[in-house]
Length: 574
Image (cartoon, rainbow, N blue to C red; front, side):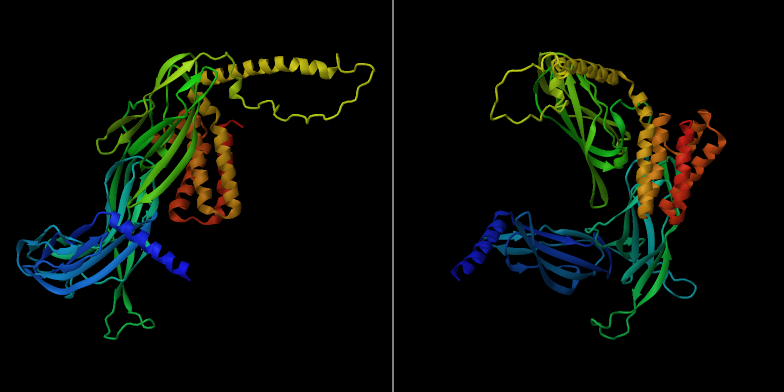
């Protein structure tokens, strides 16, 4: 019984100490910086990480207090750290025109008196509200699509928000139709911190709220138009009856739509650095080495970690060169995308195998280039610049092949031995000759293997890319076939679409930034492909685009799969 009382007390003590260790903060905030005369304004005073007493609000000169203070508290525990907030809220009406200031509020926290900073508010004169022919108020509610940028680069991340502007209460929003975002990859983002705010537009005060937020990534260059979206809003009907659990407020529908929005997608400038692999947006890079002292018989592992905001498909392994090392094709050991606010953040890690080709002291300084959307120029990042000491080894790199010949399994030790006389069957037998020759054949195999690695390293990367085009395309087709069997329609069309684009990019050396339908058709004609194959390419891509952005029926999958197989087989000359 005594232990049951002690444990809660200890937990309370730990949480209290955790709060006390954090710095006390007392702030003031308003939901608008401008308000029309006789318009509403909400002000909140928030105390964090400490208990408070004797809260004293400011005098609210030039404002009329409609309600308040309304007190609320919030407590959260994240990673063992506890935080607490206490808020005091007021609803005000602005009574006097011009710039005015809401003074400082105060509260006692322990032995200290904390004060907030004053808030500056501008009170404007409202304009008469225009009325339509039937006498109803015009433009009390409207929705518009707002883009973070209207002139962008291929692969750049754009935030598209469907913003509601209203002077009335709106309880629900149902999207009846939405643009198909043709030429873009679109993903919905849920920003929990996107709150409503009051704004003044042409002398009229509105409440502004994001109904839906999309992260869109252009996949092709050109000019595009997002068609209007149609949204059915629910407006509460006031009938004088008190709401309850069983009798909720009735709503009436209000159908509205956005205007069409134009957007222009540009290609990145030519003459990009060799370390540019297609990343566009804002990125950072870090790198690490598993060791800094090796011999010429050993290998070095380098990891490059790239984080940022942009289209993750365009973030490929940057080309690394160092005359002191043979650097092999990297592996992708991490590829993640996470939502943060209105953005999708990319997190990729590439692993490079580096083998020294001579002894000495060398510096490893990896680089990564991306196209910066703020400066509209290429930005090259460097990391590490670490010194690696390479000493001369034995001249054999057998240590790189761990148990290659499967010699790790040894026979158990024989505990007893029987001696006798007889004919020696072992010496000179095939088994004896095989065991004697095994070390020599193994050494010969290592020499051949090393020569092959050196030969592969000397091959032009573009030739490697072309030779692997068919293999990578067939892998995507296998994934598409499995998706078709499982009824996963979107995954099926994504694999077909990306498989064909990737195959053409590798086969005919088309840069990722030039992967648009018009340019690909021009390349196929230059490669003297038959018109029926070009038409088949157009049909397959059109079907995939419609399925991804316009919900094509699932029964088209079998036909599309057969066409994709025929298309790739035709390009291979089969």
